[in-house]
Length: 254
Image (cartoon, rainbow, N blue to C red; front, side, top):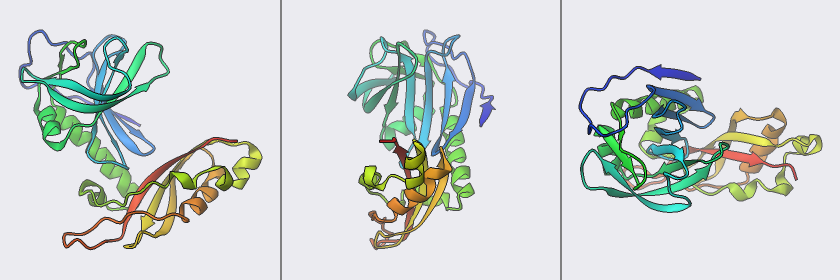
């Protein structure tokens, strides 16, 4: 699902910065939202922001030629306007397009606030400065998309924005021995996104499938998830509280 955000520049960026070739485009995924804009005729260079229901706040996304972006994981320098560069942790991902790489940056809250206000951004040492207008509105749009998705799932988005969701590594539950029987028999693989309700001691009290590649994966996924426990969040008094957690699961037929 796509919306175009017609956002006009309201301040000046460095004259040498590359102009965007598209307006901000917002899209909704199974477990999050993304907003991005392109910087070349074929949009090979893109900058944007992404949320997933497992994390908060948004990531900074950069997509460009492998020649322009670092590989692996580590720290890279980000320049905002003409200020001193800041170091930000990142992880890189290969894409289906030859020669193109995607980077997710994980800025802290203070750096993200600066990014929201910047008029130009530079990534690393090889990429040119990029003009970026109204990043704050783009981040608001991706947050609103995330909130709408959570409401549609029947949960309070404030829990997410206040970082009061449960946490924990449930990945080991979704192994070959717990593979959904109907999907195994039919040779089905695919991705499922689960919304798990948890109590104040971390037990899973309810499971809802909010996205699925195939219905044959659904029942078995919830059965496996309910065997797990999570770490409950705490209230202002430090007491554990009931909450929820969103868990994406990828089943690969053995």
